[in-house]
Image (cartoon, rainbow, N blue to C red; front, side):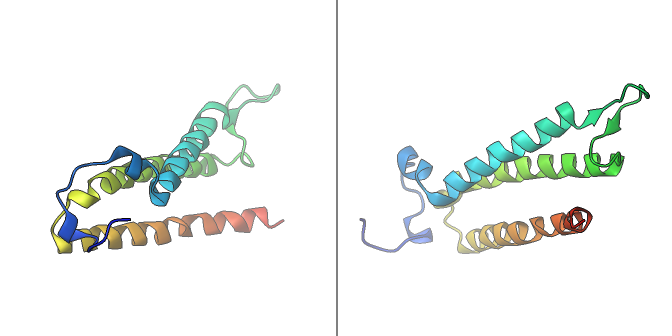
Length: 128
């Protein structure tokens, strides 16, 4: 293990791909990227169906169009956010400005905390 300070003092070093890929937050973001891709592709592909009686497509989530739009938006937002923060994780060691690093970490924490809140009303509909 390397000794010395971590963070802005070491900014500007060479990019080590293996070290980047093996970081836990990068693995978690990659998994989130894959799952969000699965979520919105499943909803776009199979979220709407029609019955034999009616030829018009309707949402499979209790025939509520807003539920399909909401879940599609959440899936796309999760995909874009995971991709954005994955890129930020790659460039983070190169950022030497402490204020910029602080704002990036705070925005990551805020987005991660606030991103779970929209799913809470959906639990009310599943509670039976």
